[in-house]
Length: 240
Image (cartoon, rainbow, N blue to C red; front, side, top):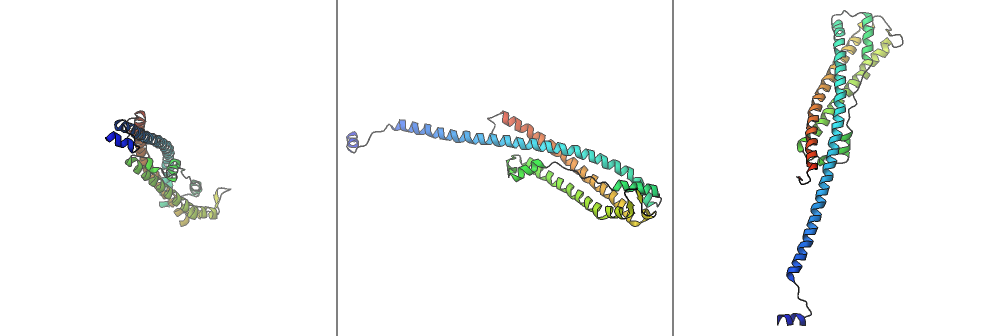
């Protein structure tokens, strides 16, 4: 009677077991597609993360080399100039020595730190692609340390332009290498210009040394993260 009623109503009898199996296959196919797509996206993110880590390693490596060279250069300058500071303090400075001292303060260097990878990752909004929270924090902290060095360098340049060069240009003949007046080196302006320059080199070396320490720590952190990422990329089943 049931089959007859279904026939009279124009309805077909379905094989619900077969239909359920077909729906299950479709569901599994769609789910697998989503899972595969998510896995592929994660692998691409890991590769991009690895690219940024490699970029940071290259940048920090270049910074370490520069910092080591400039710290050594500043240390030599300070050791050689300490005697001049003591002469000023003891009022035993000679004209020839003072004229040689001027040549020490008319040249100023400024470090050009590598920051390209940080600019790329922040400008693209991809900082959160770094999955390791400690490393992500380390990236931000390292950039803050770089900004601190920039502040010291900028302050040094301002002192150089506002105090050192005005005195030199007003009292020293650059072509002949002599003071315009023989007593110019005995003035308070010359003492302040040289001792102030000496103090700024001290502060710069201290800032560079602090950044060098942070650079070495940051480099170790990057190397650990790089090794871990290599292991994760080698193991496609390790997606966490």
